[in-house]
Image: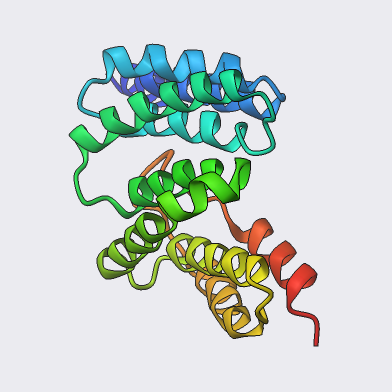
Length: 201
């Protein structure tokens, strides 16, 4: 009995093995293979928001800088499908709200003249909603600050007012504890980079 318990304690559930495999693919610079695996996991884990969330997140992150409109549209349409799946499982989730804001930000970054007016107010509102849900989330604070910096840069305004938010996010990252295994933990490196690039003394 003791041997059996020890053995089952060591073996990972199938879900954890597959999730780790997907993260390994992403880390090995195989984002679309990772997306496909997260999508397959999502078809099994139908009450778990994390697999569709990561399928969407990777699709969104790897859409920044895409110049081909047809390719971008296909990627973001797929990302929105995953995003909606995650939303249907976990409502009022600040991590999903951040991802929703990033989805719209890709379009603004692609063509500010066309999509800036269309989506800017929406993105700002999404971050306000996320901040109400999670006022001490380092990712919410960081992404909101970066969004505001982008707007300030576009209009030729100073970035300094948002540096304190980036600094606060870095402090909060130091004490951040994810709610569960595979929950989002990213952002600290990005925060440090933003601070170094935009907030020099």
